Image (tube, rainbow, N blue to C red; front, side, top):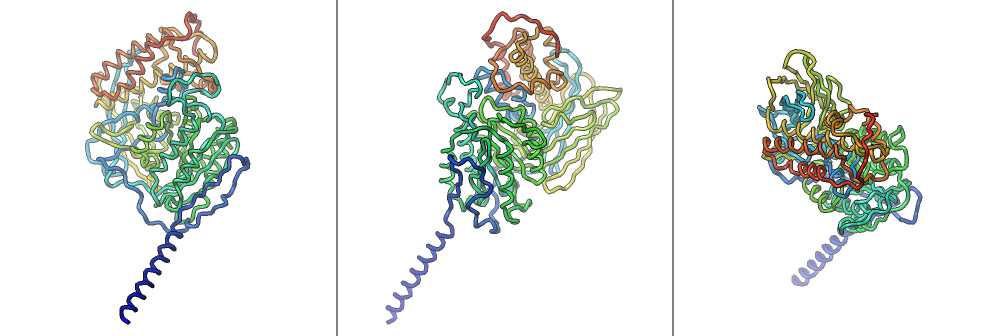
Length: 586
């Protein structure tokens, strides 16, 4: 009897456990909530699938970073200058904003000049230098601002993410990444370049999804000439990610380009989140916007993407722009990326982008410092140029403004991209300056700090990091002036300036040139890579200077810039025999 009772009890327990396991599997079933049909061309305002678990309180901590030592900061805006290098590699003249100061700085590490421990979230350190301009021999004054922090990598983890991918599926995404879409006739030269921009974008999204934790939420919006709500925001743990990845990889391009339509639907997805998932102390809201940046609508007006992205940032919805292909229009995205919390990257290789994500995804989505203002108080100096911030055009004689700082890795060589460089003009006797810093953290708390610095006599650099920042700034000055002059020769069919005239302009801060405003409208078709005889001499002259500075600094990481200078100095032109009939700076 007792054996029978035990047997019956065991049978009941096993049946109960089996039923519980079945019930659990149903509750935990992951959903393929993809809702895009490539044959349907109507905008989908609401998904048919509403996530059932969005009201659930989430307690899982965000995935920790791969820990190293400590963190510093880098500015928002461009995170590379790869579009410039890739254009030269493929035989095109790069566009003006394909290279930015902050993008080039982010390729390098800058050693901190701080002399005491950092006790707050952001601790600027200041260094001064007086340097001779290699083209004019003029005496120039510089102040570098080191972007230091008290954050240890062991203490850092990003928040949970509400992330919406907004993907351009317009017809221009069908072209290979190494071609200009409007050229239509360029020969494909290697296996990697057979990939279309669409394929690269799809692979980038799949690679990015690998960095999302179970408690992050993901939504997807697609756009061509209109927008499609392809996937509602749903926690990763409740989503069949294998199915979603397959859907993404199957996407094909079509139609026109309407940035605003895609972005508006992307922002609207955040409205579906429950109050728990909107808690800014726990969640970060970010749109990942992938495009080749070739819109056919007015996107920088009051109703365009610039305005929409700015309004979204005020609601703590920030944006990462990812540009695809050599014809990516950096000029437009450089403008849009000046909004709070924004940054952008360029993609020319799935492998390289995946490596970058492995190294810095959590940094990319975690803005920490906002509305940074540096005031210069001095009777002897004023600010004339800012290198390393996308908001440089907001700089005045007394104020430097930076929208956003992102955490950045540090090692024995310093902090990646961890510097902003100011060029000063001496307007009176004296050598002292006082700098005050004001900023907000992501919780809105205000901070203030004040510190003094002074200039010494003669030519000098306080440290190698400042010397490197000056060298790279002059390098970018030269490349941007080269782009302006050579694209004018291509687009306006005028001859190129002579060496003598170039020596007066190629080292200028580009926004100071009247030509700067005109170049930004020149886009669409490519210009073949041409280097005038005057610029070949300029590059050869600058090469000597660059090599000497590189040897003094002792930094082999500068070889990338050195190689580009050597390439341009020895470029064989497609056209010969042009006459120098340059008539001035327009």
